[in-house]
Image (cartoon, rainbow, N blue to C red; front, side):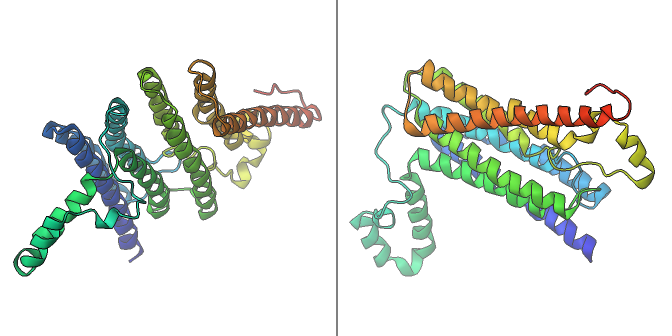
Length: 325
């Protein structure tokens, strides 16, 4: 019974991944007005193959340090978001008027003729009119709101999906809870980075859009990787070997967290924000605040690395001298 439940969770999670990816591809075809973009659905095939293989060989269980379904989900949806973001930036100057999702009149924007026709023939064509109404409502939503919604759903689904996926071998519930909490903080920071920084892009700065999207894509690699929390637990026979191991072995999770901050998350975010302020001349209160925040995180992680090495050397000097690395 438990195996059936785990397999069901694995299938449901991947089905949600595929559904959101399909919606993003549909939005691309609507925006670009080109049905050739449906070929983006071929990017779903690796996720389907992975699901079949995982269900057969591992009963749907995820892996310990790396999550293939999350990685393949990112592959299936990131190209669509890239296309939507680039199209949005190209049309920023001459974009037609649209309605935001939080507009008070969003539910009352249909024309009188449409309402009159719907009342006159509601007994025979109710489902058709509902579809037309839904399609018309979606068509009038701003492209920026569409993109922001996809970003939000993507990040929420990454967290919920990791929660639903069956635990990999050697991963405890405590480690999973820590990982999910890290995911929540990471997702909030990434969403702020893309929404706020892209809004600062001027019409004549297309190269900055590519830089921001590249850094955003690079930062999303944090979600398939679990090295910042999951660690191998030595048995009683191997404790002595761990005591003699290098600092990289004893503090692998701490060091991987520092590496993520330096090279995947706060470090690249800081570089982009400084570039926006210095090279492109965009300076405002929130941009400065988050740049200072990224700078503090980088400095504190550097301080943490120094503390780890000094602590290791001080304990090691009590016995035999072993290099820090």
